[in-house]
Amino acid sequence: MSPQKRATVVATCIAIVLVFVKFIIGIASGSVAVLASAIDSLLDSIISIFNFFAIKKSEEKATDDFQYGKGKTQAIAAVIEGTVITISGLYIMYEAVLKAIHEKVTNHLTPAIGVMIFSIVITFFLVQYLLKVAKETDSLVIKSDALHYQTDLWSNAVILISLFLVYLTGWDIIDAVFGFAIGVYIIYSAYEIIEEGIYILLDHALEYEVVEKVNTILEQHPEVTSHHWLKTRTDGSVNFIEFHLVFHPKMYLLDAHRISDEIERKIILIDPNKRWVITPHFDPYDDAYLNQANFTGEEEDVCLI
Image 1 (cartoon, helix red, strand yellow):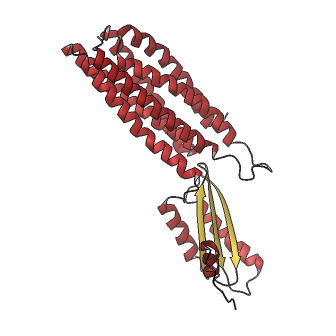
Image 2: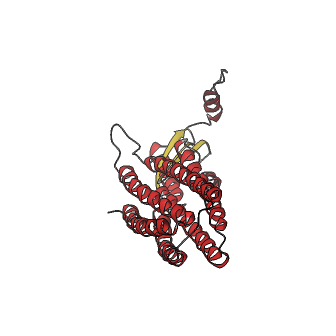
Image 3: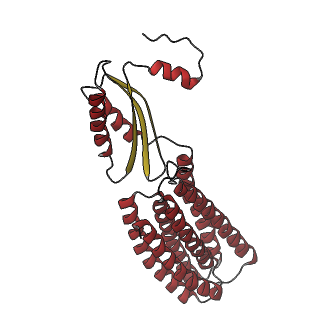
């Protein structure tokens, strides 16, 4: 089992434990914040199970029908996860408003405080584990899961503070206010997950710093006359790069291939933990103007000598 899939299994098991504990205490105490946290943990477990199958699918080898693999499955999973998180945030806000309107009373505060402390401790160690796996694998799904549980960590801390304040003051409206604030924060945190997933699905270019490093590598090779038409994208786990290299017209193909291998090795060293698919194209002259005209749809006569 890959580290990514193992991480989703661990996250699922922990989320399920927290669901049962929080639901029992949340229903018994009447705390909308604890109940909201229980619902969030339930969604966590569902999402982690979904992420397991998303990672499994993305790790499948390329086929005749899917010649670039299925890496974008992770981006689809991230968008779905972010959407589910957003919906859960809206529901929490709805429950908070109902509690404020109907002035529901929070009971059994001591057990509620205890379960939130337990949840914070468990979630903290889970987040550290997920961040470690995300750093090692650079998996978008694990990054999203880590971000999600980091959100849970903060929301649990806020819930704990609200329960303490209710315990000290007896003002149940505090629970509703904090619950509503948690809902807003959860929706805000989901935006980043959805945005990154959509960017990948739309073949957004790699980070500016990475593209600049690639440009520098291409420009500094002494046997490359020039380069153009550099294009980059990622599917979340694999980086795809294409570019045109301009060589002396009489250069042997063997030498051109050797040079491109040297360049590819340097590009891979930009991030050795990432998989790379690099596609160079060899030109005996700089046809960047022709490529640009074709790309933009300009109907101009281009004379090549």
